[in-house]
Length: 203
Length: 161
Image 1 (cartoon, rainbow over the protein chains, first blue to last red):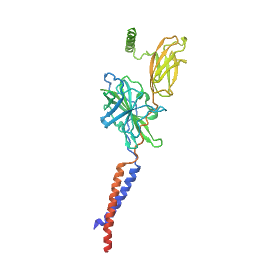
Image 2: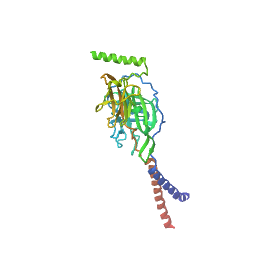
Image 3: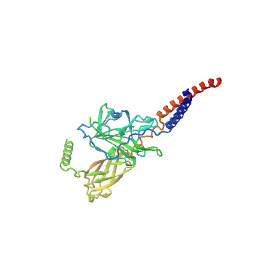
Image 4: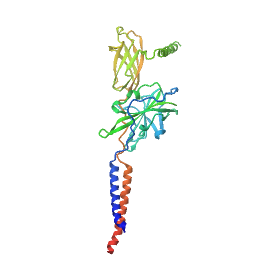
């Protein structure tokens, strides 16, 4: 019968393909996050005339467009002055830069989150997919919910980080989301870029 | 009452000034740059102080800090300047209030000390592709099962022959 001759060949092919896929699986490059363009941001949404909110720590952030729902913990900076991020073993948490304003106060509030962790994509993996006009909802410790609308999404090399645009003063209530992006430098264990989302409070 | 009236009229004056003279340098005290990564240097300038009446004094207040800085140089555009080195500063926003050598107030300004550079917010991800691993495992398993079937069928056949 014909299958008596072909079956060993089929079995051998399955075995070799299976071994090959396992090899690929063990050595594959991990999924890479999206990479937005790199130039200066523009405010596309004029800030409506909203009364500024008092200071209250943010507790949750929701970004429906990229399916993000995350708890927020306060973060500062380490002794070298580098921004802290939530621990890598809790990659679904976002951090709020507590030395800046809180979301809803006049000024730039800053949230930071991991793009990935050893367990795979993390809370802000899809940040680079955000587009102008999409909304970010922040729930605060005083139970108030404030909504920001994305103005722009940009990538910056870490050594040319737009410090003033992210942490500097602002005359409206604004929000900046930060994560990593661009090429992953295996030698240093770091991404070469930061992705920054610029948003303005609209509700 | 007197204080609050003075405050209101002063605020109104600034508002009108902004309205009438857009872009004019109204600030008597300036900080440049207004934002610095911690460890950076900012230049404090009291633009209206006359160097002839003595050094200006800048009072820098903010998170965990209340310090006086004396002017060291005459500013190029007029007034008196001092450099402030922000190493060891707690991150946050600081207020600088200047007093001229003659004791008159020279206004105030703010600056922000920020983290350095970007955020280390990624690990490079998981270097294993679980999809390929699962598919490979399934194929290999099928191949082994097939090999077992073949082996069992052949043995009785060869025994008969």
